[in-house]
Length: 633
Image (cartoon, rainbow, N blue to C red; front, side, top):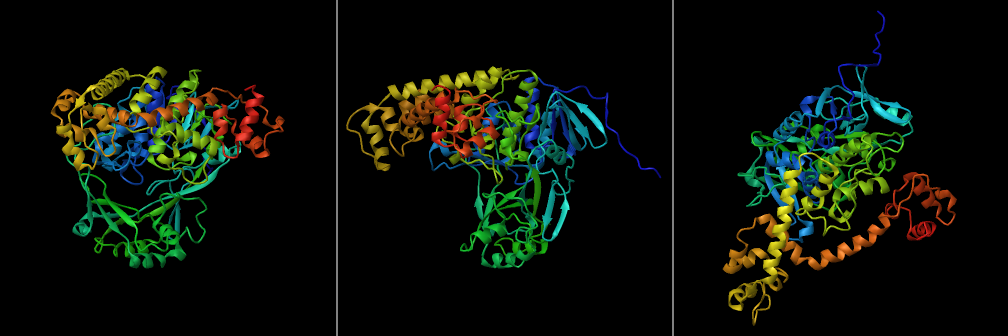
């Protein structure tokens, strides 16, 4: 029988799209939304319509720095915050014992509702179409991406393409000595794209990530574990009118122990991480349980967060027990954890290796340097985490729209958003391991708080032309006005010693001997506006008309005014370097005064500005001085 071949052909059932997004994970969904809300006609291509926005790992959004990113996505018109608010089962504001720059919102989500809500919102968008099939290649003409090719041979034309393939590019799953192709448990890997991109001149690498076993909550002894409840007055992520959480499900905490560790060690010789079968580098800040035991041999226990997967399921996620050891070893060790003595396992943990492309191959707008109108976002760029992926997707979608409409790219500065820090780090420094965002990565974190993302970013994206932000912009205006009014009242209002001295004594703060302004009390350490309102009926009455969000923002702005001003002055100095443009055809090799490493790095990365050049690893301050002299500065 003759062998059948599928020949590529242009299918007339499709229009020519402005943007095709490949992959419907967190990056892909936000990319589709970003481009569609800008006015582009978008096709979202996925191998499985039933796994759109799947939470492949933990059922949670936000966390330290990640929560700030979700707020920023929301302020920029993305949907991650809205979906999370509609589907969360618990909310906590992390780091409340620290300063406001460190406060980070985190929500436990209902995994099934989360994906369903995302799909519902995507399907409701008139600018988004869908296609279920593996994309095996991109169409390139004259150095420009003009569409995609599918597994059955269809050619779908577009003006730009955003690749958000997650862990699916040549994905390889490891459980002990077993290994099989897959992009996620139960789903096949994506093939074809890596080989084509390498042939086009792209550099590719391998990374790995992992996930823990899932267990049956009915088989756990919850009374033996520590309870971790949500906040008493839970907040939310979105600045829009999303529902407030009325009831919450608790999480729990347990710990490994020496017996667990010894059992896990019996499988180390069969671990793909230790026997060399996994070549990809894993996440430093979210290591597997076997990696933790090996690296921290002196520790007698490791904390585990026992997290429910949703409202109406008994499936439990064992956060902190990520493993690729043989399933029988995982099972025996699990049953030695306090509260897990009778645990039933739904499925074992596993590691997954996948292809990524070092992000130094990208321009500042996430477009590739080698192929015009081709954008990368998410784990294909070497990042880890839903939040990091979603933010890149949104920026790539917006910039794909701008590129095909011949408009300037939308770039967020490091002083404007954590998203700006993330993308700047990736394209200038690259990454040798899965990149995860931390507050410590941002040098201007006092400005980049979770409470002011809408003030920072919504006006920017509205000015860009994103649709449907008029109501949001009005809310920003009202919020700014309210904050100014609150600040004026606190700066003007006088307070009496007899009213405040009992409170000050309880806080071990110096008592008053005369009337002072309310601001002088608020500026004291360990003194908050809530404390003042609890004793001062006059101040309480003056501020009763304002919402909690505006009151907290005004308090932070007043209390940290000196630090905020200092940081703004530093930003202004750095912005002068951002205004000094370096063109793509700048010949760095002609500048012999530059170090050889600087010449190599600058030629490879092609920074847009002196400021960007200064952040490239291997480019020294003296190299920047040479560039400034060359530019006549």
